[in-house]
Image (tube, rainbow, N blue to C red):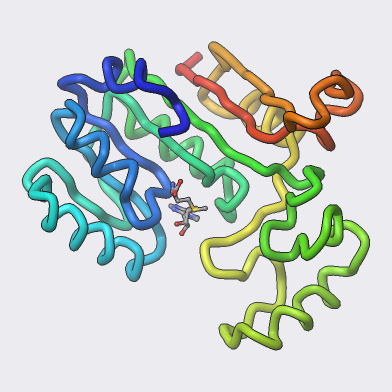
Length: 213
Ligand SMILES: C[S@@+](CC[C@H](N)C(=O)[O-])C[C@H]1O[C@@H](n2cnc3c(N)ncnc32)[C@H](O)[C@@H]1O
């Protein structure tokens, strides 16, 4: 997992929510590696069903639940590669605050953010293509091989919210949380160019930890 093996010591015996769990690989790994209980949350029922099946296959289904929402409180909320997908990330931060034990923390890791060369995800057919072409043109190109009727970036399966580092900082500043750490991991080849001015274009991954104010 992206967060390193020390993370498994942190979750030992804890209740963890994996917010934006997708097919549940990380949630299942946490259940296998010491979490007391893991709840995977996602808006896509098709992915949740895959996650449930995988948990049954490796016999951790008694420790895991995969749901579209929960009211169970967690010691740790993990969110991997999802903050650039949430349609309303401010609302997600409020939900996270309501689900966290008072002493709990959010561990989030996400990217690429919008100005990264591949920040358009599947719309980045070459570096920064998503910034050169209009949303309309890119959606028209996508409709050649996807027929889900999406007319905006935000409507593609799982969502894409054009998150920037600056916007994320502002969202946290107006949320119930404060940063205890914020690490901007540079794109390896651009690391010498990575600084406060270039960070939107040269950051590979945003890693942070949040606690309640
Ligand atoms: C790129 S995937 C990451 C999945 C998984 N965490 C991983 O790292 O493989 C982003 C996930 O966020 C989910 N998602 C988008 N908006 C969401 C929301 N409002 N609440 C919960 N999950 C959401 C998507 O359905 C998708 O499965």
